[in-house]
Length: 118
Image (cartoon, rainbow, N blue to C red; front, side):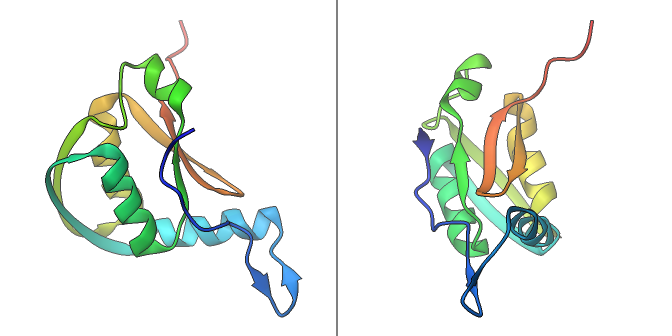
C-alpha cells in the first residue's frame, strides 16, 4: 500500500487492548479536534504523514482507490486552513481530487469517493 507508515492503531490501556469500536471512537474524536495546516505544493503522501504524526492517527493511502480517480501519492497539494476540525481539513484537501477518507479500526484510509447512484 502507498501512504504513510504510522503507529499501530490498537493501544494498550491498563494491559487491555483497545477494541475495534473503541479505536473507531477514538479516531472520530481526533477528527473533531481543531487544527491548522499551511502547505504549498507538497506531495499528498507527505501532507498525510504530517497530519498523522501531528494528530496521532494512522492514515493510509489506498492505491486502488487513488488510481480509480487518477490521483497519486506524489500529487502536489496546497492547502491553508486555521482553527477548523481535522475532518474539515481532510475534506478540503481531498474533495478536489475526488477522494474521501474512511474511519476504520486501524485508522483513516484515503480512497476514491463513492460513485453517485445512477
